[in-house]
Length: 314
Image (cartoon, rainbow, N blue to C red):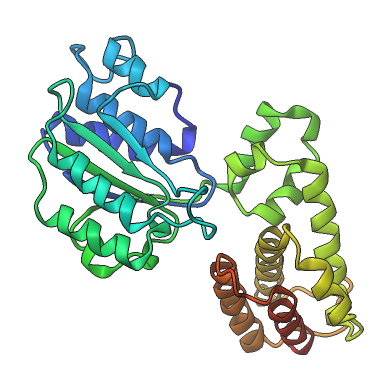
């Protein structure tokens, strides 16, 4: 398996733990969004199951089947989208996890079970999982992958070892993207403006769609700065399926503007300076709104309208 370059440091930590005989029974992987930390889960399972002399060999039956998703003792649990409209991992799934980790492994080399994203567990699921963490099977390993570890109960976080995958350097990501999809070399900076430094999300994105969202965000920021934003029209236009992207892009672009102001530079095209305290509060509220989007009862146009009024008043 060819690891993404920004995962190599974390991979080295896992390899070192395996050499020391200390692969943890419970590991919380805090990944920056769009960094593909599932590769680390695959590596963890290969380190655990490999029958070669220097794991992971990548060639033995265990390594190959783990990478292909066909090893019976390497299990990945994700939200059940057919049963949960909110994209949650249910208490039923959490109980099944407990049952799977209580049973002996199929091939006698232990079990590696991955929950991704771990923050998708609802409260009941998290409570059910806690019982599993309190009574681990000696040869079982539970990996929790999340970009929002603060959404997990402290009782779960405290029972896990931590592995952090930070956002990679923007310049390095731009270079990597230009190598992977060179036809968009000049577009990648604006794509990252919307998606953040999330290389895999950028690689898989519809570039034309992201660029259109980027232009729309810029128009909204300029309109708000000049006090002429048609808030109600924009709120209803933004409330569709692209809303998470638009909010994330607005956060990223607003952050860039704040950093520019802190550096003492004038914002191009801005009618006035941003009130720093108001802008920072708005950033926090935008992040909270993005987390609330999974709630079926959320009135999206109204929620967006409220934030746009705050943006115009910032």
